[in-house]
Structures are given as C-alpha cells and as structure tokens.
Length: 177
Image (cartoon, rainbow, N blue to C red; front, side):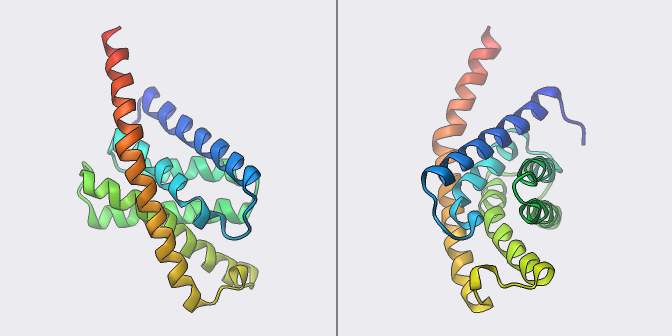
C-alpha cells in the first residue's frame, strides 16, 4: 500500500481531531464506564472518513495504529485494544469486502469498529489483567455491544450526511484554485 502525502495527512488530521474531541468530551462529561462504548460515534467517524476518502486496503489498520500510538500515552491497554481491533477489522475486510470498498462496506466497517473495540477490550482486560471489565459479565457484554453498534452506526450516518459532503465541497474549491 502506497499512500500519498495528502492521504497520510488526512489520516493524521482525522486521528488528531478524534483524540482532541474525545478528550474534550470526556473532560466536559466525565461519564464513568467504558470509553469505547461512550465514544462509539467518534470512533466510527474516525474510521469512516479515511475509509470513505481513500478506499484502499490497509487504511483501516494504519488509522488504528496511528490512533493507538496517540492513545497509548493515556493507557497501554487502550492502545493494545485499538491495534488488535484494527488487525481484526482489516482481516474481516480482507475476507468479506472486495478491494475498492463500496459505500455499504465502508458503512459496515466503520460502524463495527467501535463494537469490535468493546469486545477486544473486554477480552484483553479479562485475560491480560484478570479482571472483568467494569464488572460486566459475558452475558452483559452482548447488550453493551449492541448499544455500541447502534451508536457507531449513528456516528457514521452523521459523518456520511454532514461531514463527507463538506469535505467534498472543500476539495472541489481547492482543485479550482
């Protein structure tokens, strides 16, 4: 996979914006609980924008690695979960989606990223730390994952309807100049 400087900049800017927005949200609304579930719309946006704009294999994994590098400064567990999620999601994309990602494939991959992140975090916390995540049992994890899937889908729909058209308008303006 060869990316242009513009594509790498897009990934870096999206991750930086997602990390800053996530920090602001968690500072302003200090909600207890699993951060991946609460920030599912933001994670779906963070994965959806580069996938929608670049549509190549490896973009999802690269975006996850960049986010994991940033988030590892906060928590190594979070960084490890993000990298593992990126690997799993890229494997699913390799098996289920043809190389130029369709709109439906981008929607599916973006909205399932936060859900898979919740599952991977629960597994890593259970087997590495030996502690069930927030005291959530395995039977309680399924409703949490469904809730995260709904939030992730809502986040990507907002991204698809609001952000991507505006990005397209800005790109057209830049090409004219």
